[in-house]
Length: 134
Image 1 (cartoon, helix red, strand yellow):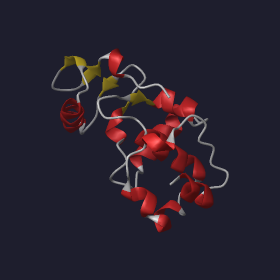
Image 2 (cartoon, one colour):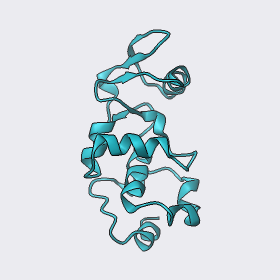
Image 3 (spheres, helix red, strand yellow):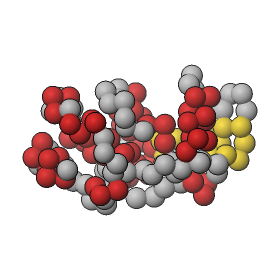
């Protein structure tokens, strides 16, 4: 799998992302879509894919891992062309969940084993013990 990605994006720098921890993802077989995205976006997708179930990461942690900004990570997540990249595991730096689809995100994260400090009808705050650092 890593040779395939390097062949598509020779300049891709996956510093600490362990490709062996990434589950099989159909987005890796979608060569036509992969070739249409910038390498820095591909790096973000791969980093998110390496976050295990039951854990979350923040836009800031992810940005530091991929040598970009948290704003870029957030923009990339909004334009996600791949359904199997688990963007629901990426939350704000203050560990809060808010937005239009927050109830669905909370439900999915709970099913994966993520714990919350508080939950309301408008959002939630994730327990800091669930944060995944690369």
